[in-house]
Length: 149
Image 1: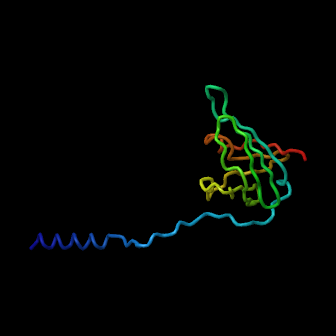
Image 2 (image 1 turned 180 degrees about the vertical axis):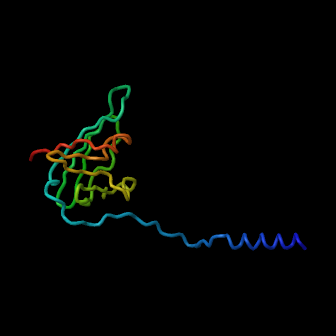
Image 3 (image 1 turned 45 degrees about the vertical axis):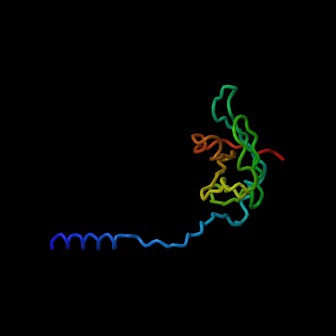
């Protein structure tokens, strides 16, 4: 009788501890950046930065980034040496008061993220960007050149 009670209690605990799962698969939510207000005029223009990523047997791999920033969207074009070209195109901009965030808004699904791809800030007369280069370099602020047009 004691073994019967132990088995019954074990079964009861097992049943109560099971999670209720829905049978219908949930639709994945897509991250989308909606249109935001215009950004401060100091960020409007053409910018560029060049970064070296790693040494290869034929030279130093590198990426040159060329940003065109308009009132409420940005465009990126890259030139690379021994690096893949990806995530070029349109970016949405969010103004965070002290800096702006750029989120990929193009056609390459593997480039979309809920986190900003780039952050740009102005410190005195110089611009700086975070997110360029390889994983190690992309967390540091690097000087961003504003081209005169």
